[in-house]
Amino acid sequence: MAFESKHKIDSSFSMSSMTDIVFLLLIFFMLTSSFITPSGLPVSLPSAKKSKIVLQKVTVTITRDLKYYINDRRVSRSRMEQELQRELNGEEAMVTLHIDKEVPTEHLVEVAGIAAALNAKVSIATKPN
Image 1 (cartoon, rainbow, N blue to C red):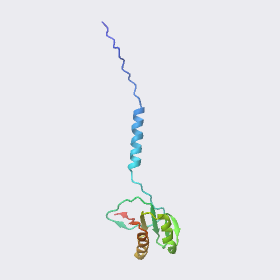
Image 2: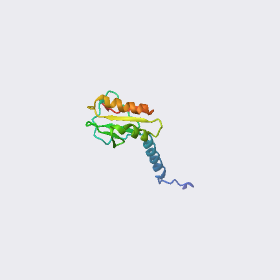
Image 3: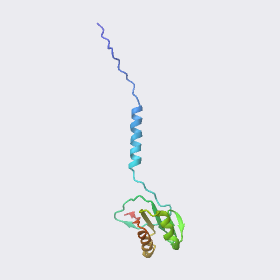
Image 4: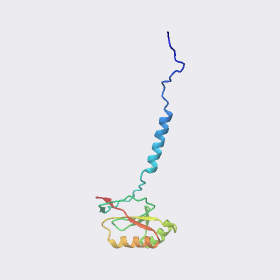
């Protein structure tokens, strides 16, 4: 007596659900990864024991030869406040300072004071030890 099953099992595998999962994982990792915008200018940063990565909106760079840059655009020292105010657009933002470790501290304090006067939070970029 031969028994036949009325329900046949389909042994094929659908890849559509697997591609959906991979696509969702890709989106998840892209959204949760830290956004790092490295400074394109060659600056030797000072080192610190603890270095925190901050989302950078406005960066101010001072090179070893005392050239000032705002977001990779060269500015003169006398125009620093006007250009920084234009970049911040009157809103409270984060200004990250990329200052060469051989630059005298007075230049760092001057730029940090300008940013603080414009109601911006100031962060100093360092490299981890």
